[in-house]
Amino acid sequence: MIPPDTLPVIKFRRVGLSYPGPPAVHALQPCDLLIGRGEFVTVVGPSGSGKSTLLNVAGLLDAPTRGAFLLDGIDTAVIGEAQRAALRSERIGFVFQAFHLLPHRSAQENVELAMLYQRVPRRQRRTRAATVLDRVGLAHRAQALPTQLSGGERQRVAIARALVGEPSLLLCDEPTGNLDSTTAASILDLLDQLHQDGMTIVVITHDPQVASRGQRTISIRDGVLHDPLPHKALA
Image 1 (cartoon, helix red, strand yellow):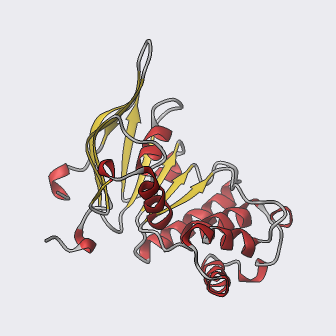
Image 2 (cartoon, rainbow, N blue to C red):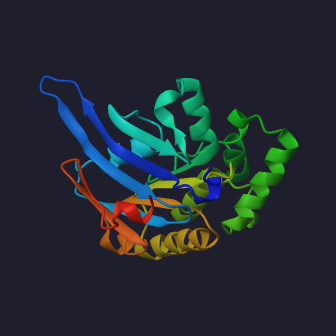
């Protein structure tokens, strides 16, 4: 048996996603993809290229219409929707361009809410939220509302919320898209630090400077994935 910590976090085997027509739309052409534990991978492509489709499939938000997707060695095609939702909650953290914070809840409360579905006891939720906010440099702003935070601080709260469940994969969709260049650089520095701490990170971006932060960059165009890494390297 292969030890869990040596399994790829993401393994696509001829994974594709099509929407029925007419005419049918092939949003993601059948592809192979391996992302190893602790990698920092960026995904680039023009608007409408299939970047969001790739993220939705990797994040278990959409099920592929062909192929096999293994997350941490678990075949996601043979489990039910409730199990998929649990797997998504336990193993994947999401960071979006628009932050998606509840405006009338404090930074700490926004982070705590991410643990409700995991049924973490209230006292433990408080402790874990405080710890992860400190990790992203926002311990001093834990009680502030999102409207009292800068864009960079709101994105740090969103990252803390994504991390609090201790996922094995962090998926970021244009995480710097709403930020000025200086603030964006600070968020990318934070992602670099998380990567150095061992987090597996995938960042969807259209910005070449953001893409350059990754260990490797995958491109996608017209639903066709181009990966510079030979798949046998992580097989």
